[in-house]
Image (tube, rainbow, N blue to C red; front, top):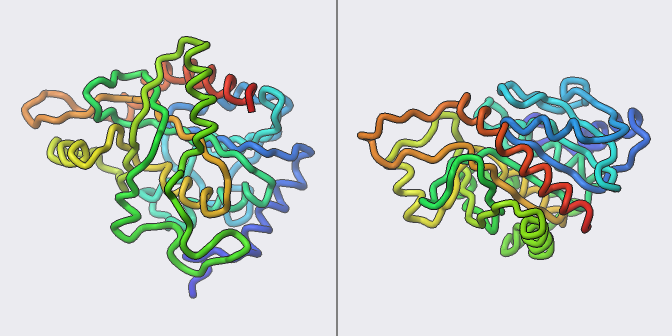
Amino acid sequence: MDEQVFPTRSQFEAAAAYIRKRTLHRPTVGIILGSGMSPLANAVEDADTLLYTSIPHFAHSTVEGHAGQMVIGKLEGHEVAVMQGRIHYYEGYTMQQVTFPIRVMYLLGIETLIVTNAAGGIASSFQTGELMLISDHINLVGMAGLNPLIGPNDPDFGPRFPDMSQAYDPRLMEIARQVARTEQIPLHEGVYICLAGPSFETPADIRFLRAIGADAVGMSTVPEVTVARHMGIRVLGISGISNVVVTDATQRQKTTHEEVLEAGQVIVPRLMALIRGVLKQL
């Protein structure tokens, strides 16, 4: 079997060993920052920063708005490993390469993962700049055959057929709700659906996604969450609504990546307040 398609345990361990040698921090919380959300990593204290290109076997991020580095340090009393930008399937990587960092985080000692993303709002009540607590997801790309767990299963990581009935941790979700109420942060809840990208959706796509129960749509997160849950890592998922999707082809409105990045300026302060509040209560 091709090692590039199916990374080996030794590759994961080599990456983890490289990171350990370059920081004294021993993170237990992982945070993944989506498009336009890189400024959140600036809040990490006593930080050690490692470029993805320097870490053995790591793929590197090629998308604007994704800095492509891991920031390890302290945030609200916790030692954290922050992925300042993620890797996407549409960049030409395999699902196993996309989720490689999650395996490495596990070996570093990560027990809790906070996943963020920029998403298109499908629910009619959503407005640009708002946050959505991910209550569940639809793994559309996984159903189509792009599940990151396809291939050899290492039982030391998790079972061949992992349960996904609670992909997002109920206790972490309740903490997020409490923080949002206390800090007066508007917080929707809903179902996130993952598409492969990189093209944005047609109006017909959106009508279909709405019909099957999706509230927000993006091109990430679900593969990472699937692998995290495979290893028993608790997950909290938060979407920043970066644009309201087009549902009618007659609308003279275009969706652009620039729009997504601009929305991050509104989303980041709210997201930072929410994440800080959650970490305080962990």
